[in-house]
Picture (cartoon, rainbow, N blue to C red):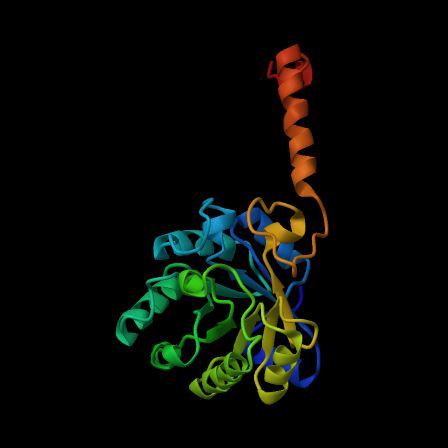
Length: 267
């Protein structure tokens, strides 16, 4: 078995110019497959609101939802760094409450680090979390908890002023102590500029090839996406079709009486 990945390995990989791999997972079986495949980090993302719970955005996810799924994933993970996503409403109100929620996600959910969205407005929250001994992954660009302010899932940072704000936010997050930053749905040139300006790693999702690593939602690469399908998705297999065919076959066999047979019964 490969050595356990830690936040220190993220930094080493950036310095060694080794790309970092990250995928979301929400269940024990999928997390086991992902971890065994050698992925560097697993994120129990608030994307679970859409992929698991069927909402049209991430805003309805609760801390309890995240804790329960992070617990399940943690039972499967031996190597990958396990990161839990703090849901909308669990941060940004006051830093002490944010730190309590992060502590709960680590203590009860078995996360090894937490992620939260936002730039300069999150500095005090981040410092408070780090102060109690929890590593923090930052997240700027298209931050899904801001979907109502952005007016939908739209690329951020195309205008010069907004691009400058994102660059400054990334630098402020690094100064605050985050171990890496997710850059979501921003122009590749801006992502490259941010990546080159930081000493900590950047993890891209829809931010081009010059980030230090990449993250995707597991459902997207497996073809299990039933809602938003952004340009940055690459589908590697169509599991949806495989599952559908299996279910149809089962349905037909039960209806016809060809399942179960003597092979599936007890004497």
